Length: 152
Image (tube, rainbow, N blue to C red; front, side, top):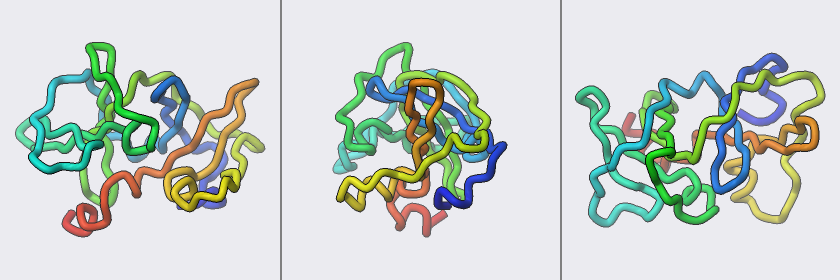
């Protein structure tokens, strides 16, 4: 979904990652839970923290900061795991905090700035201006590799 497909009135969850604010579509979020240690997977990419047991289902947990290229998170008791679903695939996203629920208003969403990197446009759907702050609207589809989504 690109910026033009995001309707006014859309609800977003605002999270903090590496000292910055990001928003994701609330419809992709299944639940929010506290951090618990995960079981590492051998040879997994650095941004994959491991797996947790979610009511009998094995759930991969991804360090969202690392996946976005912002460095590794320092998971602690205050950290939060957002359980998200994309194309039938459930996964957890480690974030520093959940800050707010935001309803998109007319004129808030602006196009992703062109910074010369296609990776930016892969993850960023647009930027939201609120008062003096900027919140980056993220796409969740690129968080998991295409082969993981195809297997779902």
